Image (cartoon, rainbow, N blue to C red; front, top):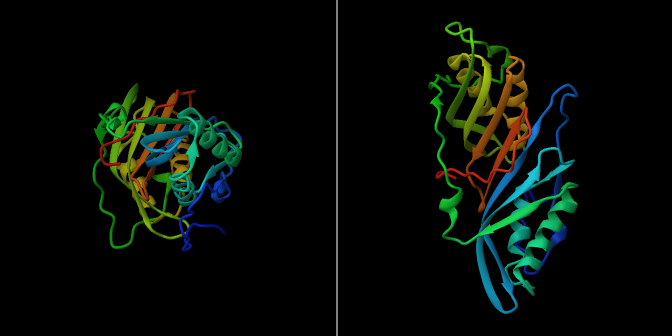
Length: 262
């Protein structure tokens, strides 16, 4: 990939929408129904309303079916290019930022701002069944979707919320590790917890963008034929931004939820 990721780039000192770098989304199987959003929490939002600096935290919602997403380092540089930019009003700033991102990803992006003391309003911890820890060995295994199976203990249809705080993957450009918490909610025949935990260990050495990892987990779990499925990864922040991709078999409303560790 040519662009700012993995490159030494000076922060722009003035409004720089052209620095935003789109990333084409990976191909999805044509037989998979997938809804959702990519929620980006931004902790370094600042611009000037006339002559007065304004400071915010906020979140973006990018539709999961947009042709492109945006590269996170380029978004950080873009947002910081606004620090000294003057807008006539807060609504003008919101419209400008949303419009710039929408043009890059090819779909309508929304931005919601909160006061810097308002994070508690969208912070909610995961309540579910924690997946067991599994030995990884000296070298983490590759992703093996054939490990996924139903539990021999239960055969009836059930609803379950599974949680893992050990999700780890690698940036495909820099090779740096990304950590997150994973939420899996499904209805259907019971999924074997140990098999799922072992499968997820394969991502520890997998190079993939956040959205790609979530979509692969989602598609692999669909092979177990659940009646409904939702997969969410709450990745920890880097450079003042964190990403939470939501994928579901059913249409789902935009949810700005973040975790304390983000």
